[in-house]
Image (cartoon, rainbow, N blue to C red; front, side):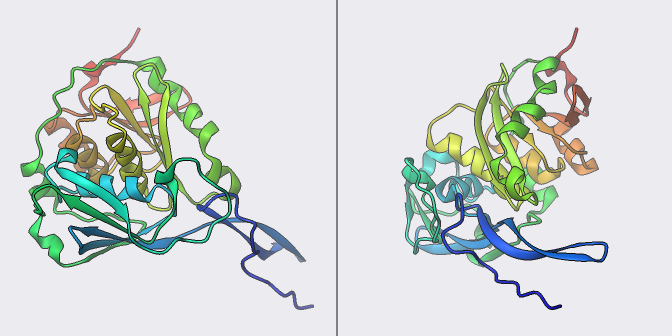
Length: 288
């Protein structure tokens, strides 16, 4: 017997990150039609002063946050203070559900205007296509341009130990569909400030950071937690905005560890179930 698979089910998405699709389940020799949510992946063009800088393959939602976070953490602008205007200028992405926060309206293009009209990273004049699974940067070049973290924050180990559960409880898209990364920013007491989900782990980092920058939330006393591995991109993005502690539910790479050590960032991996591996600057973690 042949089963017909109809793709998108109209008006069934609970929010822009997901769409409900029809598909087939195969269990042994039994085949049955089914339906469920899948994660949306779409392009977003980021412009600086009207010039295209990058096209990110991302999950819809928090477009302004993503654009601001990307431009700041990639060093395309001097810092958030150099930005004078952030605006949507593309067509709306169809999505069910409404959002009271206008920053959450999904768009195809975001333009960022700087106060001086300058773009710091000149190689950005060639538009970058940044795929959802990977970032881009020259690690040696990035390390030379970064200023070590200045924060003297101390965090109880038990706070970091419970972050994984707090994040898991808030992962709406992951619970519905899987296949999506989450990044959260917590305060030193372990209270959730923001959680962002995206098919790209670097996009999720930029969304969470951009959320705080747009709302003037200080980052020097916060903790970054990611479900993705702790790569050098995660460390450099954290350091650029002064985040002193970067935590991953997964492992860390050698380059991430080397950069975190050099740049005074506390890097923690395998943080789940009350256990963790502290790779660098353990003095920030209070034990006992």
